[in-house]
Image 1 (cartoon, helix red, strand yellow):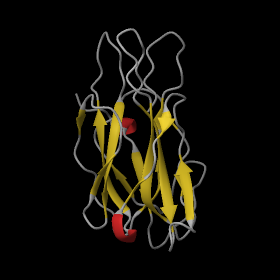
Image 2 (cartoon, helix red, strand yellow):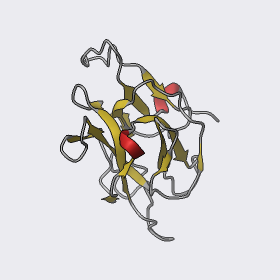
Image 3 (cartoon, one colour):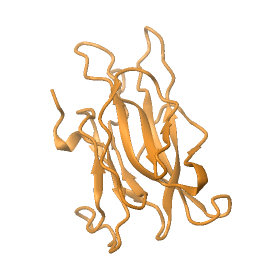
Length: 188
């Protein structure tokens, strides 16, 4: 069963004629998206790199496997590391909403000053009854064709790649399920 358009993680991209976000959504930013994702949660506000910056790297917030009696959430957040010029001197980090569990990984970077231009999600299909995790990992393609796979978990399978953007990703929007107490949590 393929999820609806509303269950997708979106990456927002730079366009020549950028406009700022309006209360009802983003206007003027081309969007790349994938067709897999989990049915749980609510959309957070998008977060954008500063003007003139593009995502050159990313890091993930991952909760490790919790064992047979634990509640697994797997991928809890994605940060884009936005750069302009020398990345050591001009780096900004953007993050849409994240889940509360896990720890942040060290950033993975595109080589030679490249930018992130496409992505693919590893998603575990819903399990009934069972311990659902939804998104478990993400991989990005750089402008030079290099593929970077995050340090997420191995449950589920990677879906198709998004379309590619011309310059580079400059923001993201996530769909996150809030903590449910003693019930099954999924996070991202």
